[in-house]
Length: 306
Image (cartoon, rainbow, N blue to C red; front, side, top):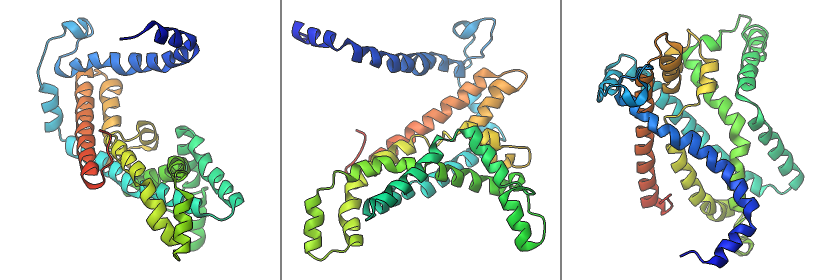
């Protein structure tokens, strides 16, 4: 039961609650209110009748998507990009954090941190523009070096379906590597200095201390971040994929998010029900994955979200 004393304490901190109200309102308006629109996935949505009065059609649109010739290709592209990004990018921030923590010179450490943090603040549009300039087959750094070493014209990487995946993944890793190390560096601050001192007395070198002291310290944090990353496996970044996409690489660049956009907004009919069904399918798969990865992490290491 809330007492009058607790009410007075809360009233004395009204400024903090006012600040909290802004993100709370954002979450409610943009994350909870739209949940009601998910019923469109099982209705033949008609603008004349609205969501509530549109007729129910059951799982028609889910069956349509699963039976579509696009389903296997889109699902394969989405999972390939997601798991490629996860397996290639997840260990690197951990490695960088361990190396920075072991750096003997603070000046070099701060310089490396600053250089690796900066790309995170580049917008997606600017990032894709940089990629187009750097990997331009004629005037870009890639094209010039390729011609200088081989004597022939460089192939167009943006027209190559296989090159699209590598450019998408590794440019993302480069952009977010430094930023992703922050949480691991914060976790390493909790390492008891006495453990390192005792290990040094026992004759452990820096690499042994990193392996037996630093790494176990950040493993619980890494487990939580892995669980959260697993919950976003199906959510390949729409903006970057869409900006890098063209008719020549679409066989590997068409993912669920871009397909939903085209179905719901680009096509002349604007099939909102079909797009909603695909989006709901995407969310259900993410939910199942986060449950499974959470259970695996809990069983193996004891760290989990619940």
